[in-house]
Amino acid sequence: MMIHFSKTYVAAALILAVVAAVSVTVISVAGSSNTDEAAPALASHSDPHPHPHSHPHAVGSADGPGVDGDTMVALNFDGTFARSIGELTDTADVIVKGRVARVAGVINTAMNPDDPSQPHAEVFGLGRIYEIEVDERFKGEVPGRLTLVQNEGYFDIGELSEKQLENPSSIESVGNVDTVKPGVDYVFFLRSVDSELARYAAPSYPYRFALVEGKAEPEGNLKEEWSAFAGADAESLLGQLRTLSN
Amino acid sequence: MRSIVLEKYYINAPLRVALLTLATIGSLILLNVLLANGSNVAEAYVLKGCHEADHDANYVDVHFAWGTNLQTPGSAWRTAWSTGMQDWEDANTDHVILFWPDSTSAHKINSIWDQYNPSPGTFSHNYFCQPHYSSWSLKNNTWATTGWSANERRSTAGHEIGHLLGLLHTTNNSLMDVDRDRSVVYVPKTDDINGVNASFDD
Ligand SMILES: [Zn+2]
Ligand SMILES: [Zn+2]
Image (cartoon, rainbow over all chains, first blue to last red; front, side, top):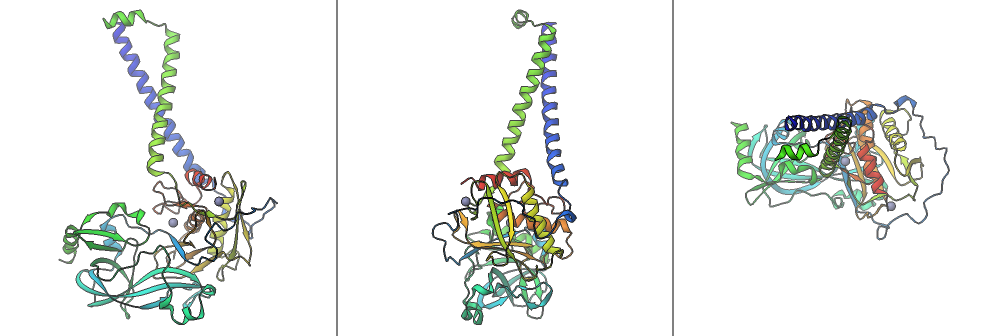
């Protein structure tokens, strides 16, 4: 009797503990999404910002050591990242295997948002053009050679020299851009931007996989997003893509 | 044998209730600690090791200039950036974060149209930045955000500002998660705020 009662008691205590813990967790999760919904209404915001406070200004905390006059820049992007080969396949107009035949110059990709036929007044978008020699097609109608335009940074036009503006190919890509390399076989997932000029660009990231030593390694900006693709087998990727073209 | 032991430690009803309550509270705390730690290890904020230079122990002052296509108050992206700033000002961060429009500032916020870049927003900064971004600029790409709602734009602006404040990407559906639903997640969440608190702890 005593043993029986105790077992029930222990079981009940455990169940209660679990139920209580789970409900508290659920309540706290629900609470955090409620905070999101309680965001201030857009209309209540007056522009420019009201700044009623006066406060001590930061002293001596300006540029860190070694960064004065440093014009080398790096980029952080927001989205759009694919999480699987299937997602990449859906977003790409064209999927090919190929390699860089030559670097064919630079275009300014930053256009005026109020009139996209005109270049931007203040920003230069470094779009480097790579001619890609195609040796296998998996998706899309593709010529034997196509051009890939890769975004390699943005610059304030005021910071570029006249020489750089006259010859934009001389503008170096920003510090952290992992550019497409000559001599490496790649699988490219591409989006058609200009069909007359056969110009293509990334539909999302990653958009290219280097085929090296039997592996298909994603390359390009923000590698930390790509754990889902790391260390894939090259032959199985190619096999998977070949079923698309059949 | 066991019954003897139990007999020996037999406890009365009120004490049983008290112990049951204690056991429940104890397990509850233990479980929550385990759950919280588990998710923090896998998903919490990630710091760049660089952040806005203009700050002291109490305030972060972000001085910036509106770019040429963001001159009109009330326009879609001007509103998105302004609201994204307001969201960070209103977030309960340890430092008071303030944004100061200043047409002479070298830190530009620009709107561009770039069909070669699928990213809706970009934060550019000096490469050797530890611990401070001496030069930086923010951009939105209207090509990549055609048809987006006000909250999706606002989420993008807040995310890019998060980079300026020192945050890298997460996978926990915070503002810094590139996979978040921008129409739902558009203000800094607790994890984003914790990240900024840690970022400026220098
Ligand atoms: Zn980002
Ligand atoms: Zn600092």
